Image (cartoon, rainbow, N blue to C red):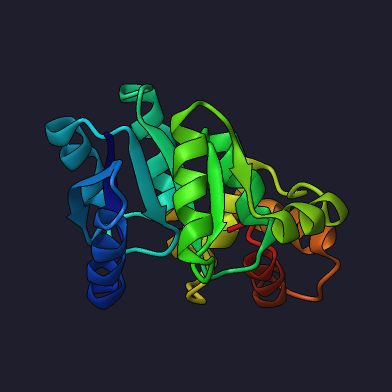
Length: 201
């Protein structure tokens, strides 16, 4: 029996997917949660074989949760579920230790097969996203440039960003300038849009 932890903030989707998965004779949904910060406690308690994690959730994205989950409970294999066709997300998921990356609109049989393959130790990646990621390339942003750009998404002033990240305003300006140059955009708002569209943030 493959024990599954499902994390998705949309209650209707979570309930429907739980019902679908329990129809499979070799699947058992051990827990279903709606927030990223509920994943690790649920995994500790229920010890699933597979964690199906949505990317966008309150309390931490599936990408945020993947690495600490794999670090603390390496026996739990992670499949990221997404509605976002952003190749940068795929690369980040793989870098975080995910074994699978599947579109939410996949056929139920395809998802079930992906779960079985990942449970056997294989990797399963959505073919369209895999092909697209080959041509998009890795994020050009350094981790610190990413942090600064992400902190600027809401249009906060430089000094507020600097205070939040414990950096000097000059350092923040330098990182933003580098991010703008690397994304080929005219300002930080446009740089952030490009980074989000590519799944780099």
